[in-house]
Image (tube, rainbow, N blue to C red; front, top):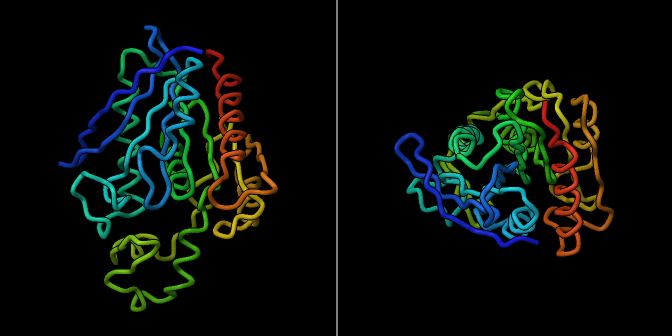
Length: 254
C-alpha cells in the first residue's frame, strides 16, 4: 500500500470558508476521487480511516465540514442558519473546487454522504448527473423532512430555535423543509448507486430503503444486520471495503 499525503483546503462560498482535507497518494498521477459529506453535527474527520484506506490504494478522498453544520465548524456560520439547502450549496462549492484539481480525473468523481449528508448528496447529484460517476449513501436520512413535519405540523408550531443532539437549529431549518417531499426531488439520477444501511437503525427506518429502491433505476442496497445509525468498527471496515470495490468497479472510462 502506498503512502498518503493529507493537505488542508479552504473553499470559498458566499463569503464563508469551507474547511476541508484532501487525502491523496504520495506518487504523482491522475486519480479518481470520493467527496465525503458528513451527517448532522458531524465533522471533516468523521471518515478519516476510510479516506486513508482509499488514498493508500490510489483513490483520492476529500472530506469537509458543512458551514453551520457542526458545533466544531470554524466557518463562522451559526448552526441556527444552516439548512439542508445551505449544505447542498456547500457541497456544490466543494465539488467545483475538487474537479479543478490537477491530479483529479474529472470523469471519475464519486459522492459519498452519510445520514443528513446522504440526503444532501442525493439532492446534489440530481443537478449534475453527468458529472458524478457514482453515488454512495450511508444510512441516508431521507426521513428528515417527514420527521420534522410530523413534529411541527403547522408553521406556527415551528420554534425560533430547537436543540437536537447538542446542536441548536434555527427556525429557517424547519421552514425550508416544511411540506417538502424528498422523493419528488430525487430518483432521476441513473448512474450506479450503493446504499449501505443498518437493519437496527433507530433513526432511519427500513421503509425508506424500500422507497429508495423504488425511486432509483440503478441502486444496490447492502444491509448490515447488526448495525444501527452509526456503524461499529467492524461495520465501518466492511463499509470501507464495499465502498472501495464500488469505486474500482465503476472507474471505467467512457
